[in-house]
Length: 336
Image (cartoon, rainbow, N blue to C red):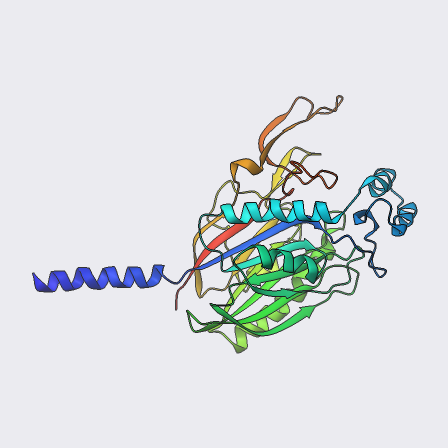
């Protein structure tokens, strides 16, 4: 009887021990989060106050739709406050504590600090890439759990976002963790551009796997990659890492209105010394909307989708929406 009690206690202890140390990881594309100041090195004129002298640069926008949008968007400090309120509402609705948060589509450290000051993640690392509009990525982390050990950035030979590498020491697990935040070239670019990003990242991952096999690796972000692409850009990554979404079904993070289709553009990958407890997109009810296709002479006319993300309207203060992407998250546990 005593042996049975000891065995039950041991199993309970092991279970509690393993469950007490997960890594809760989230990636969130927050849809064009700019400050309201003119950066003379980038094309950020769409996100300036309507009377700002920098609005004159909207004249050089070639696409008539985007030119009109550039001139009419009145981006102000009041609207920045509203936008951070919407995004932090989403993050605070998440039922578990987030350890690592990748932010996609933020302009600079000023915006990163808005998140840091409004949620319970005080560690912040930003990228400074070559994107023409000045879009960057960032990592927020729990500075009580993690110690920042280093930062690197990997740039592609053309103007796009850098891949951000952050080296952390996990004080809880007593393990090094390498985190990569990505925002690969959009679907306006052809597949080879995303393949270049994948090859650049894969080269670094292969070096880590060879020289630091015990370290944990987490790769997250908006990869702008569709399943139909060939050769598939994820090929080089999956030779080194595992896809957190591999065993999930029906997940998507982005709804493309033009073709009324769902895509999982936002992903999380991990090293083999981590296993996935769960992977999903996070869809609070208040972020979900309805999309109706209204253009006639189209095969999609009459389509109606319930549950699409409420994209952000940068001209509104009240009920402006949230993001055109849902955040994705994964609970990861160490294997060895």
